[in-house]
Length: 407
Image (cartoon, rainbow, N blue to C red):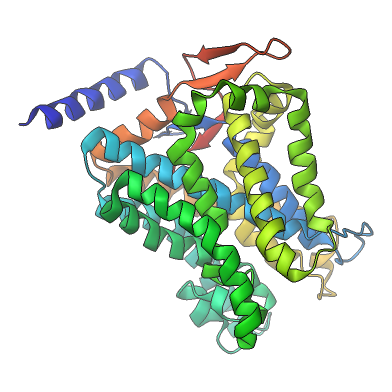
């Protein structure tokens, strides 16, 4: 065994020892590496989606001028880029390579069971004539190509974002595996600059693509690329005192406010595609980084509050199942507020406990020590924390609080 392989094995057994001492949170029978505040941010993202989709449903009288559901999806995209890249880079650092086989196997167990259960159930409902689907809805839903299907109906309409995620999972790990860390980060940076130009180019020169702007993978990939870039340069940013002071400054509160405010700016499309969207991505990434670093901040404490964390854990199943009940075009009493929201949460709970969680446990059986080492080490990273009002950066050690699973 080489010295490098021996070191990876030693670190793996150290990870196992840390589990026994309680350094990682357990959820049922599943032991998960977790990062502070990220489940809370997922809860914020799904809350934005639910609020946006509630507009226009029966008995819901609030009006939203901002496309807040789309903003919530953007938050999910940035989170996905960060989480997946963090895991892959840590695996590369600890073991010298990325196992694509294990990565894709993890994605299959994480994503497919809940989504295909949803697709199967709506197919049965459509066959029973209880709901109506468009001609190609099921084909595009099952193949994760809804982002390129402008004619999708309501019941699969939200699956465009899962299609984007799956295309990202297919392309990015393979790219990072071939390119390595340094060139991979360069590719992510180029994507951040190129995708806004692609949006403008498709709008100006490909009129047939205009309905898909903001849905097609190549027109939203910069949201995930920003998260990838944050994962790659976060350690370097930690060494810049000016950056840490900025994140801990009272003026940083303007960042989330201005990021959300950009949703309602009446900008022309060329400015929205090239300026507004990239600034929103950057604002979300900065908020993500701040929430992880300063876990004692009052806002971070809210994000790590157990009920909020639980909503974040439930967010994937909740995203799948909110769509049938938050149907603004339906006159059914099941789609009337607040019953529709209760039914969405009920369906999500069933999906999580009956489908999603058992497969998450099964996924652990197929993970190699390499992946477990990477996941645990990523969560075990020290997070810089700034005490409120002192401006002094300190290192946070010890047990991690309520937080997000790496994958």
